[in-house]
Amino acid sequence: VTATVEVTPAEPGLLPSPAVRPSQVITLTVWTTEDLAPFGTTSPAASVLARQIGEFYTGHPGVRVQAFVKKPHGQGGLLDFLRTASAAAPSTLPDLMLLDAADLPTAANADLVQPLDEVVGSAADDLFPFARTLGTVNGHLMGMPYIVNVEHLVYDPARFSAPPLTWSTVISDAVPFLFPAGDSNHAGTLLSLYLSLGGTLTGPAGPHLDGGPLTEALSLLDAARLAGVAGTAATQINSADEAWTAYRAGRTALAVASAERYLADRANVASVAAAPLPGRDGPAPALGTAWVWVLVTRDATRGPLAQQLLTHLISEQNLGGLSRTAGRVPARRSALATWAVGNTDPYVPFLQALLEKTVAWPSADVYAAIAPALQRAARDVLLGRETPEAAAILAVRSVGQ
Image 1 (tube, rainbow, N blue to C red):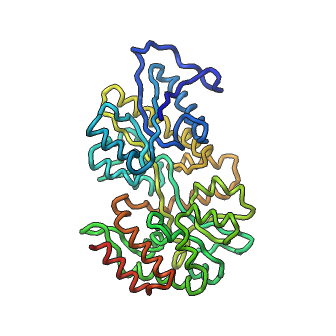
Image 2: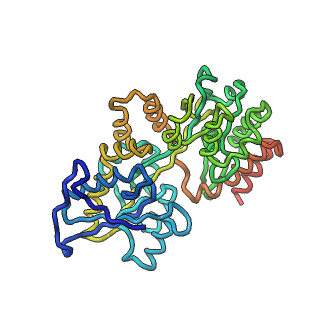
């Protein structure tokens, strides 16, 4: 899908771009996802992005932006197209594109994207720490984080006098806790707990799991199973979105949800509040993902213009406005701070505090190596098939093979 974003006098607050001859027009090509595309009617972000690009036009009257929508992942997705086009049809490559931060190391190590340290300057210091980590490869900022997402607890404040911030509290409250444990693509709850207990994901030989912290994490899950608050139901939940759907349907008063879904749906739920994920002695860190802008072009003419478009889109006001309208979490502190202006919503300071302590989601290669083992261990413990010790040994061995 492709469209060229144009400014018309009918758009409020914008002036039409001055007429230029076709020979004078410079076209910047952008690859993006459907929900962050500057055209169409299905995305809340579309009109905001179109307006922001229109504002860019007013200072660059000879520039046009051509946006192509591609799948986020997999065959025919953004990274796949970037790799294949770079080898087979470099003339079709974009100047600027969005990319899942989990795929950034692959793109950067293949020399498909350009460093952004000097392009974004001090804006990098405004990123939430985990977001900057996700955008950094080999010591250089290779992707500028734009939109982020995290998972956290949702609970019914009518059922809890205080949010359950430890697994012992979850167990003692005796309320079924729904979290995704049925799909290795969504093993974030156990991964968060494992990391909070000192577990690591990589070593000299590559991806690995530590037996001690994993056994301890699985023991907490086993205690929850024995108490009847976690078990078969969790193994039937494949994502945080499914856990949130179950909460909305009244199947539990305690679940895991993503910030994105919470922002989109909380107005439709009678009683709900947010809290960090539970840990052993206190909250466990959230795991953060991000979509990052990457600079692809090396063209001497389009390159500087693509850099200017990037800095325009990630500015505090533009990112703040886009994220608030679209119900997506911005990667910059100052952009999220714009949400708080004239707003008493308690979720905003909650997010601000949560994001400061969030841990970066592992790269795609590392996660692919550890996630199946984590999910299998969690499933076996929650179903009573294995002891925590035995499940941890199997998981450690499977990753080390």
